Length: 258
Image (cartoon, rainbow, N blue to C red; front, side, top):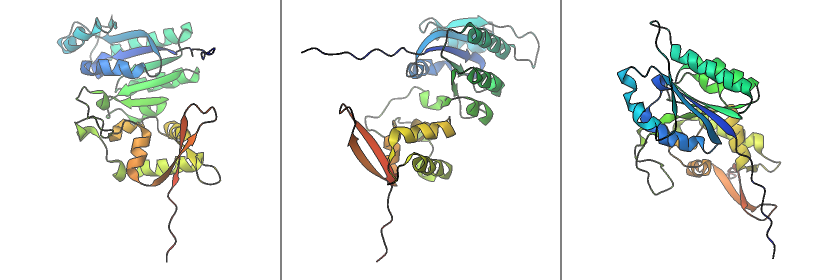
């Protein structure tokens, strides 16, 4: 019996550009693992003034993670030369035309216009920053990952929560904004009977809210989060190619009053 192998999909080539002044060295391993979900980190550069003591924690992880440090002196006070150097390099890489997307690692709003400009050229932008990151920068990215969920902690074996340190998680049942977004996304994705494919629901949520990530609420997957709410019916169907199964959800129908 002959087996036909599926063609290997070309992985996206990404540039990971890190603002050393606005990122933590302790998250770098988990951050690069996260980047690997979206493509190959073909370029890995980090920008800062390496003559200062505050960047010492970074020096221990650069070599082991093959990240190239870019030296940028602070020529004047109150002027962020590091941001300018990162932006100039990003534009050079963009015009070279060898990449499929960028990963911008910073909590600084100065990169908002850069993210918008990259997207205008048809490339993906993945942002990484702390929850203090200005909304303008978050919304300028295709997807934004809060780095609090990348901090190294011991994981729990159960599906939920993902980490033992639950202090960084939002209570999904109290987040009325997200619950409204979720319900609207299900409605936008549903058929005449109200059933919506879970994957399509996730895509619609991501388009409307780049910072959405089920891990922000302590869940590994969107399905785990939805199941915890007990607001939706769940239907598991066989896919057309009969290789796997597809999950569908719809709002629970209200029981008629007696």
